[in-house]
Length: 267
Image (cartoon, rainbow, N blue to C red; front, side):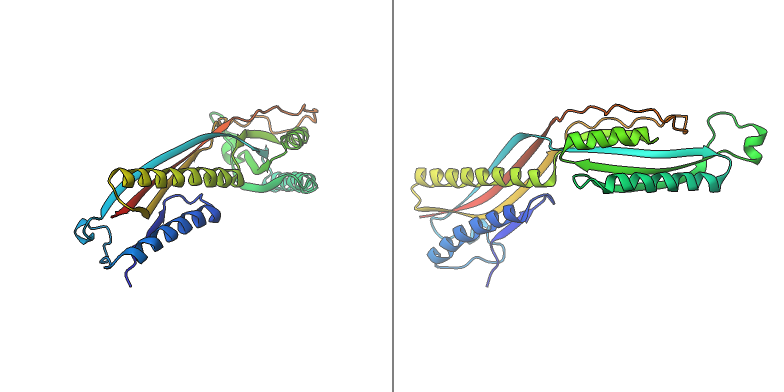
């Protein structure tokens, strides 16, 4: 039995639903051809020399694109401390991050993860003799937060700033769920257009049927605007100031989908 129906996806972001739509469409269209065909293809089913008399192979392509409002707010923060006592510094960072995690763990609407833990010699300028013999160390650990509830996240970020953490990044992005839903919608539109074009071409050429026998998908998304990474403050000792919650506004992400297909036109 020859395998002459191909499905290929070049984007890791397509959902199972989108793949199911493609597979079902290709299977149904291909089944019609199998029933009507009197001789099978070789392993290279789309070699023009293998087409039956009166059959044509048509190459089609379509690109769909839309803008979607970003629905997830992300924040990257860090706590750092510096001094000459390495053990005291690490204890300081450890205690602060423990308290920080207790705060975010209590908020169910926020997803979080800790970042890398750094411990390194801090040399802001030309080192003095004491800095060489007894260097200044800096300890730092990061924290990433994300939520679809921007008000809750922004309020939490302000609270963490008051606790001594500093913002490195604050930006909106498009969630995977929204991207999958948008891709599914674009895929349905693209398949309908491809089949419609194949049917129209078949009618113009006096062919009785047009079946999509190969479909290739290329998709991508532009995550939108990312704010640049802000430099860490030189002072690492919190002043216990009360911070107002920062502000952020969502942008738009571009989601595009290109679908190409081979359509078999039969007499």
